[in-house]
Structures are given as C-alpha cells and as structure tokens.
Image: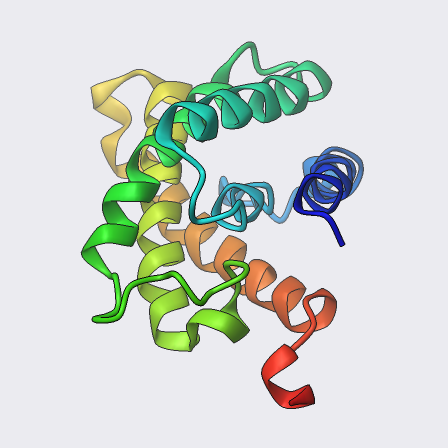
Length: 172
C-alpha cells in the first residue's frame, strides 16, 4: 500500500481512537492514556524534520480541536517530532535504517522500540503535563501524572502494535 494512503488512514484511526475512546476514559489519579504519539513514531524514517514537525502540528491541532485543549497536544506532538530524529540517530543500528520499511516493534525489535518510543513518550508527557499545569508548586503532582500515564500509554501502544501491525518477518 502507498505510504501516503497508509499514513492517512493511520491519521484518521489514531485521531478517532484518541478522541472518541481514550479522551473519555478517566482511570483516576491524573492518569491520561495517549495513543496518538505512536502515529508520530510510525511515520517513515526518511521524512525530514520540518515535514515531520508540520504533520505532527496538524495532527496535534486536530486532536486539540476535539479535546478542547487549545494547542496542548499540538505543542507536545511538535516537541516529540523534534526529538524523534535525535533519538533515532542515537539508537541507529550499525548498518543504518535503509532496509527498514516502517517503524514498528516487529521491524525494529522490542529493545529498540522500548528505548526509542519510551524516550519519546517520556519527552512528550513531560512537556504535556508541565504545560498543562504550568505551576512549579505542582511538581510532585506532575511527576505522578507522568509516572502513571507513560507506562499505560506505552503498554496500550505496544498492544496496538501487536494487534494491528503485521509481522512481515514471520511470513517470510
């Protein structure tokens, strides 16, 4: 399938899942489960930083428009998109990424996914909850929110990868 069509379908599905299901969940203790950062991770490797940041900004704005958060998701998505090439370069394999078609847990491996997506998710959530609160006297509350939201978002993203992304290595 064409990369543009595939990513357009992912765009719509991630927005719908985040807005219709996850935004309506209230697990308590400030936990906020987010699946949409996975969309930013799964964009093609060869995408430049500026187009990546523009797509992430548009993606975040769409989620903001449904969530009534006034740019909070957009700014968090742009921060994540900015750090994505840096994290990818830091974790790049010796041979590079040329042979990889898409970014997912199957093509990159569990350890890479844990480090790359985990790092990006922590960056995203730190920015999101810091800007949301915007008060230094709530530092502990921000850490609690991050500590609860990062693992739940990561596990849900991992589950989505295992259910919806095909394992092309197993087919060969």
